Amino acid sequence: MQRSDFGDQFYWGVSTAAYQIEGAHATDGKGSSIWDEFVRKKGKIYQGQHADLSTDYYHRYHQDLLLMKMMHIPNYRFSLSWSRLFPNGTGTVNKKGVDFYNRVIDLCLELGIEPWITCYHWDLPAALQAKGGWTNRSILGWFEDYVSFCIQTFGDRVRHWMILNEPLVFCGAGYFLGLHAPGEKKFNSFLAAAHHATLCQASAARVAKSLNSQLQVGTTFSCAHVEPRTHRSRDREAAVKIDAVLNRLFIEPVLGLGYPVKDLSFLRRMEAYMHAGDEAQMAFEMDFIGIQPYTREIARYDLFTPFLQANIVKATKRQVPLTAMHWEVYPPAIYHLLKKFSNYPNMPPIMVTENGAAFEDVLEDGQVGDKLRRQYLENHIAEVLKAKAEGVNVQGYFVWSFTDNFEWAEGYRPRFGIVHVDFTTQKRTVKQSGQWYASFLQSCR
Ligand code: GAL
Image (cartoon, rainbow, N blue to C red; front, side, top):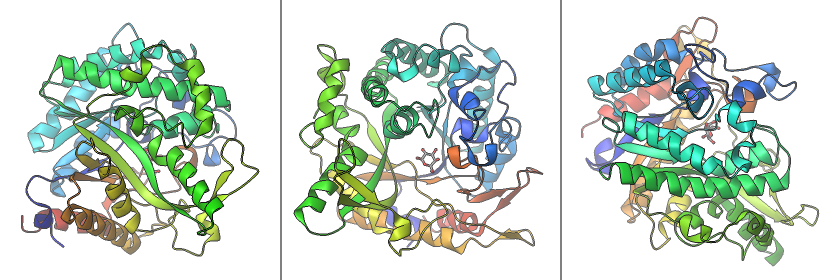
């Protein structure tokens, strides 16, 4: 397999997110975000870790972008920290935050790396959470103002934009399971947040396109390939429900199909948060859709799971190869998901905006021989090629992640980077997987 097998028009890249790498959590006027606050709560993060410093990218982006250039990486997806730009979420702009992203973007362009921006990768300004955050319908106005500022400020140099990163995860883990910021555990909060995020992804995309029709505007979704545990009808029905939650809940409204209420009856309760005309407002013709496949899930019938009567069989109980996140390594998952999403009649081009794996890396004699990650990437990319060869309109692939970073509630333990970070010295070491990706990207085009 060579890069040229994908053609000239394929976007290859790496992905990161502001809170996971930047550090400088209170530097140069940055306001607090829900993650800055959540990491300070007891027992929420592995070993009480936080990302106050993380990879110190805020001060080291220059070195990281030079490394990216040396690795022949042509596209770089990163997110903007809302509270670095607007310390209170709305109102006064923090000029030093704007300067920072201008420096990052300008350096990317100088180095021949195309910047791709995610507007929101989970770090809501704490000041807005104090007003209810995603559960408050006013987020529509706050978010539109924020996104239109970003487009007006950076849209002259950045062509590709993603509105949200994985709404299911920040609404589900953040407002229902309490595992992520802001740590709420209320089903109604989840429903409200989910509906507002659904409206925001469309309305902010609409605003972005109306400000500059030349831009390529999309949004990203988490996803997992779902199979039933057995062929019994109850397990198959469970798989339909789990699939609707993991893969359909947020994308179908954008495609104009509404919420998948038929398969998820609990979504009827969403009506409490819906206003007249919302259904039409949820739809928007995106220029592309980002999908972020990592694994496969096995679903089974379970009487005791509220709302769903369906559950996931943990990968640790299935005797399958695992990553350090305890996710199954199953490369065909990405192929099945590409096929699945491309089956929607009005599906825009698909980008794989994240894919990658955490493994127990060992730094020895200045090297990280992460054979498993190299194989993971190679095998997943081969599955992307297979889907593409069968006619799926997939136009890009971004590795999660460039450097090791702060993996949310899991702290620094799972390392996802193709570049190793020593969090004591901040030394970067390109892993074997990074060397492989670099030579793949350089292979005859
Ligand atoms: C995604 C998320 C990233 C990263 C990755 C690995 O869900 O967008 O921020 O954490 O998973 O877990």
